[in-house]
Length: 468
Image 1 (cartoon, rainbow, N blue to C red):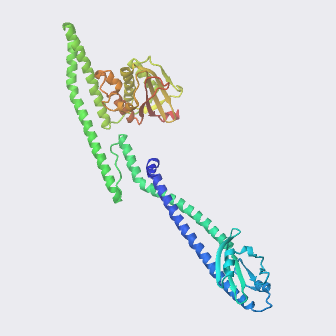
Image 2: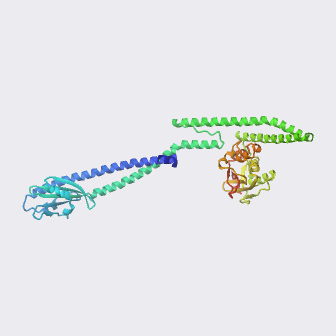
Image 3: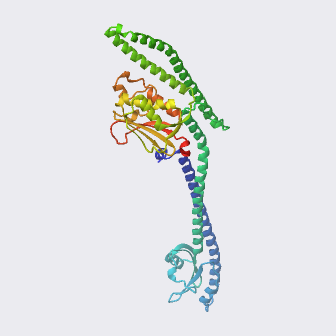
C-alpha cells in the first residue's frame, strides 16, 4: 500500500490524504467513545431509576398481598411506573393465575427470569430483546404470599435517542474528515509553495535565463535550500559564461589563420594549371577541409553569441514567404510546399537572419543524412505557427531525437556516412535560434507513417495575426 501511494499519488495528494485519514480516524475514535459513554450512561440511569421504582412497587404489592381480599388488578393499575414500564403478577392459585392490567402477557417475560424468580426469594434483573425491542425486566418473589411480581420496561426511547446520536456522530465524523482534507489542501499549498518556487526557477534556468534566483525567505528551514540553490545557479552561470567566452575566444583566434589559409588556397587555386594532377587533388581536399573548418568556426561564434545573451532584432515576418526565400536561395525550390490556409498570413515576430539559418540548416541536414527533404508544410493555430520538414531517409531513433540537438552530437545516420559529414552544430544552432524566439523544435514520425523523419519548429504567432 505504501509503495502504491509513492508511485500513484503526488506529494500534494499524499498530504491531503494524510490529513483526511487523520481526521477520519480521530473523529471515528471520538464518535465511538462518545457513543459508548452515552449508551452506557443512558442505560445505567434508566436501569437505576427503574430499579428504585421496582423496589418501591414491590414493597407496596408485598404489603397488600397479606390481605385476603386484595384486588391485584386495581393494585397494579395504581402503581407508578417509569416511562415504558408495565407490571404483571403471578398469583399462587391452583390455576396459577397471572394478572396484567396493561396487556402484558407471560410470554413477554424471559423464561429464565421467571424460572429463577419462582425458585428463589431474591430480586433479579434481566436485559433482553422483546420483539426486536431492547427491554428491561425485573422480578421478585414476595413472601409470605409467594406472589411473583414483575415489571417490564421498554427502552425504545433510549434506542431512538442513541440512533439520533449515532447519526449525528457519523455526520460530524464526515464533516471532520472533509475539514481535515481542506486543511490538508491548505497545508499542502503552504508546504509546496517553496518547492513550486524552486521548480519555476529551475525551469527558467533550463530555458536559458541563467540570472534566475530564489527570493530569500525568513524560514530558517528553507534558508539552506534557497542559499544552496542560488549558489548552484551562480556557479552554473559562471561555468556557462566561461565556456562561452572560451568558445568565442578560440573561434576569434582561429579566424585569422583561417583567413590566411583561405587566401593562400585562393592564390594556389588561381595558378592550379601550373600544378600537377596530384597537387590539384590535394589542393581540392585542403580547400574542402578549410571550408568545413570555416563553417565550424562561424557556427561556434554564432552559438557563443547566443550563450552570451545576445539580443535579437525582432521584426514581423511572414514565415511562409521566409521559407520560400530560403528554398529559392539554397536551391531547394523543387521541394513541394503547402500551407493550411494561405489567405491568413502566418506572421511571427523574430529575426530574419536567424530564422533563415533555422530553415537552411534543417534543409541542409536533410540533404546530408536523408537524401533531401520531401515536403515542407507551414500551419497555423490560435497561438502558434509551425514549420514541418519531412524526409524519406532512415529516420531518427526515439532515443536520439533529443540528442541530435545537442552540440557536437551526431546521430546514427551521420556516423554511418562518415566523420566528414558534419561537425554536429547545425541542429544545435537550430535549437538555439528557436529557443531565442521562445519556440520549440522536435522530431516525430512522418504523418503518413512512412520511412523518414519529420522535423517540426513551433513559434509564437505575432499579435498582428489577430489584428489582420
